[in-house]
Length: 99
Image (cartoon, rainbow, N blue to C red; front, side, top):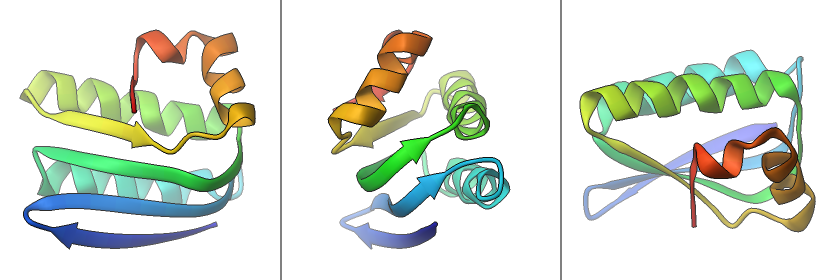
């Protein structure tokens, strides 16, 4: 997994490429935490994410809760059908802001 940060017009976007599993989840969580601390609103682009495990879902949930308590917003963009199905099966579609 690789994450590239891009800021344009004050909007921070994290472009995630690869799979998010137990091996890559700690780095994913660290990037999300950094984004939560740096930006009130940010986007996580899942356009190149092929798979997310429960470890990756945990990172998203922690970040979503943090953003909600601080009045910020994390948006997940460009989710493919396989990852969207994971979000639906786990109930994350009702917790996350999915564009």
